Amino acid sequence: MTPFEWNFPTKLTYGPGRIDEVGQIAAEFGKKAMIATYAKGSALDPVIERVESSLRAAGLEVVIFTGIEPNPRAQTIDKATDIFIAEKCDLVIALGGGSVIDGSKYIAATAFSGGKSWDYVVLGERTPREYTGAFPIISIPTISAAGSECNAGGVIQNAETNEKSFSRSPYRIPKVAIVDPEILKSVPLHLTKESCIDIFSHLVEHYLSSHAESEFADRMTEGMILCLMDNFEKIVQNIEDVEVRGQLALCSIFGWSGIQALGRLGCIPMHSVEMPLSAYYDLPHARGMVVVIPAYLEHMADAIPHRFAKLARRCFGVTETDDLVAAKLLHVKVREWFKRMDAFLTLSDVGIPDDKFEQMADDVVRMFPGGAPESTAGPRPISKDEIVRIYQLCK
Image (cartoon, rainbow, N blue to C red; front, side):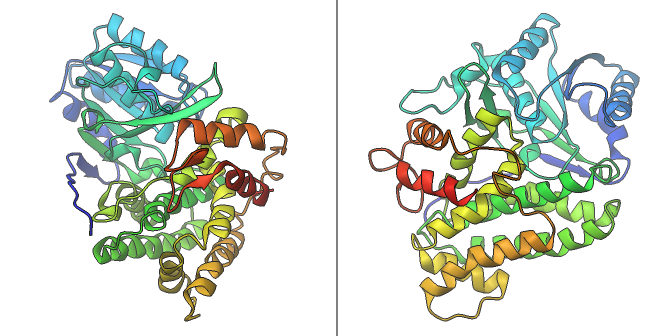
């Protein structure tokens, strides 16, 4: 195992109806809250009103910012940050999926630290600006996917340059996450399927991107993958099953919390390859991961075959004893699983042509450089030509 540091400072408040406690919880952290959420006009509107009522009942003033996009724009986040500062807010209530929670992290930290949200992201050789702190964040996830409600990460998009990147800071870890399965059960079936695969992407990302060995992390990851697969099948049968929604919520939270990578922290090449799809075509991140995962697994099987083979055997029933052969069966089994769940998608299915493959690959190696020229980080450096090949396998 490699040395590591890890803690889990977010307080988890879980249970049906617990969203109504948000006012009481928020009163411990501030007096004027910004509710950051999606544009109005959706099924979430009554939930926004419910949160606002709880906050006001607890004596807090409330400012509501609506309009955070599924791929949150830096320009939108900067507008929200300006309002947060002008209104003298002192905490953020992030009500939505990973995009809203990610965006809220930038609002809270940029309002405290100054500058613009894009100043802080990873961008090639540029040295990102460092946060000096953040206003408190309370996250209320409305879908189980990104796990952003309990971690330090955050992804935003620059609409002016068609770039999408991320930053991490312990200052931005939410103080409390209110996980209410009554809200989660309203997620429609197609988004539920994509969110389950997004959870899977987080679980396999570090498992397959590090040469280091940590049996603890492996078993934690494998257990969550098996739990995810079991409950994926159950939720498809009954999307309003509150107990199953709760199990998926835990897979989401802990699948991207760091516990899945203790002792073998790796990189995130699958996410790096997906980001231009969202940046150029506004493809929702989870849907992009549905497209990218099988192709990535197919192309990279020979990079660390013993790791690919281990996952294939322990989670997908592969019995082949030769590591390389077993490794090359992983993408086959994953495709079969996606198709069995009626969740498999290609670039053609989501309407993305092949005319920007070179340009997108250029962006990946420029924004997220690896250990070799014209490459991005992975279990081995992944060249620009290989990234193009992965996109071609997504067709």
